[in-house]
Length: 190
Image 1 (cartoon, rainbow, N blue to C red):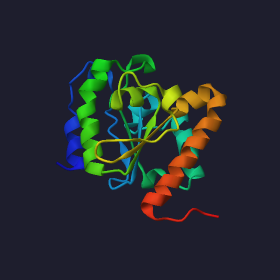
Image 2: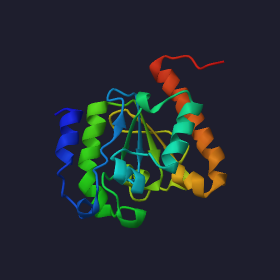
Image 3: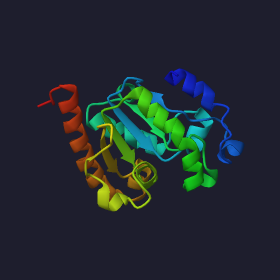
Image 4: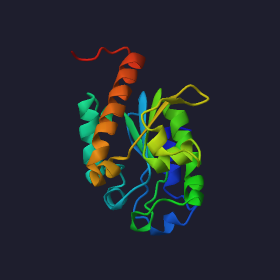
């Protein structure tokens, strides 16, 4: 199955109650052959209306963060743990995330990223484990069984709420840039 076919298949998903309240499924966007994949929590109001991930204020900040490490959305792939907006932007339940994770795992298999950036606690606890804590694990490299390098960091929305998280996120993305350049064979700008 291709990424395009998976995106078509998910449009009719009713695996959890989030499907009832959605306007649009937010599948993901970016380079289908990206070496880096960013995974957030789930769609907000703007994302639900447009069908695209990270298009609101947090998405604008993510664009600036990517630009600071010389990347654009066209070079990475952006997805979420859940593909439909939780009511009132609440955190998705474990059951909602579990219903959506097979789609996310298939996206990861098809894209084959070398690096995954987990944006926030929801992405971390659903992909690493329920005991994982963003405050303890952010900024540390983890590795999947398949050899993918994984970096948890704060979600851009958390940075917007708490400016004290800016520096840690910047430090994390400097590590991400260094690893990305190493893996892609590109040379950092002087």
